[in-house]
Image 1 (spheres, rainbow, N blue to C red):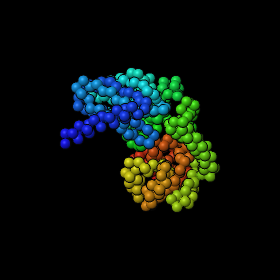
Image 2 (image 1 turned 135 degrees about the horizontal axis):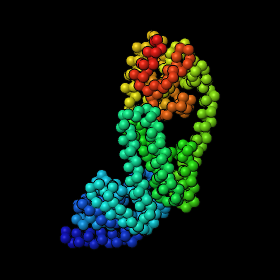
Image 3 (image 1 turned 60 degrees about the horizontal axis):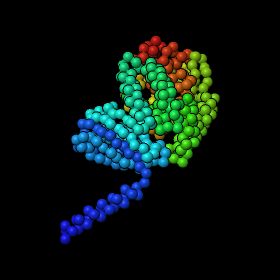
Image 4 (image 1 turned 180 degrees about the vertical axis):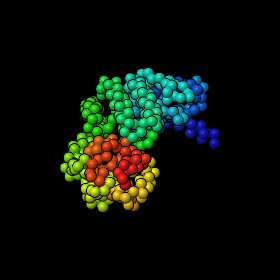
Length: 391
C-alpha cells in the first residue's frame, strides 16, 4: 500500500510539474559554465525596486554547467547571480538567452557575458566602478591629505570619473538598462556615509536624470522603474527650486558683512535666532561641524578642553551644525556650554567657501572683528592661532 501511494505521489508531482512548465509564461534563460565550483549552489535573484528576491537556483556539478530559467520582464530589469559571497549583476528585457561563464575563486572579477549587450556593459561599469572605489579608499587613507586638500582631490577624481562614465555608458544609450545602472552607482567612503555618484538632488546632475527619465518614459512608460524615475525627477526638481528660494531668503536674513568677517544669524536648539554679533568684543571661534559623524565625539571632547582653558580669557565658540537630522543635532548639542546653531541648508558653508566634506573647519574672529587670516582644521591649529591673540 505504501509503495502504491509513493508511486502515485511521484506521478502526480510529475504531472503538476508539466502543467507548471506549460503555464509559466515567457522566460529568459541564463546559462553557462562556472569552473571550480563543484557542489556549490548558484542562485539567481531579481533586483526589483522593493528589494532582492531569489527566483531560481541550481547545484553545480563537476563540469560547472548550469541553465536557469526566469520569468521574462515586460521592460528592462535587473538580476544578480550569486555564488558564495560573489555577485554578478546583469539585466534582461525579453525572452533572451544570456551566457555567463566564469571561474572560482574571485568570480565577481573573473567572468564573461554573451548574448546581452546591456549585461556586458553592466559588467564593464561594475568593474570600472570597483577600480574607482579602490582609488577613493587609497586617497582617503593618505594621511598627507586632510581636510580641504583631500576634499579638493576627491572632487577632481569624482568629476573626471563621472564624466567618463556618462560619456561611455549613459549618453550613448539612455533608454538602455546599462545607462540606468550607471546612473544608480554609489561611492563608499572610509569616514562618512556612502554618497550617490550622480545625485538627482544636485542641480549639476538633475539634467542627466531628466534625459534618462524621458527616454524610459517614452519606451517603457508603464514599467515600475520608468514611473519611479520620472517621479524622482519631478520631486527633486521641485525640491531644487524650493531650495533656491529658501537659500535666498535665508541669505537675506542671516548674512551680514561686518568688519572683516561675515556675521551669521541662525536658530539655536530652542528656535531662537542667535547672531555672531552677540559675541562682539571677544575672540570668537566659528566652528562648522557635522555631528552625525563617527569622529564627532572625539572632536567635541577636544573643543571642550579648549573652551575650558580659554573661555575665562575671552574665548567664545559659535558652532554651526551641518546635519540633515535636526532631532539628532538637538540631542548632540543639549549639554554643550557654547552657542550652538543649526543650518539646515548649509548656506553658511557657502558664505565661508567651505566644502561640507572637509568638516570640521574653524575660523577665528579677532576682538576687533577681523577674520584671522587662515582657516583652521585641528585643535593644534586653533591653539597656535589663539597664542597670537594674547588670550
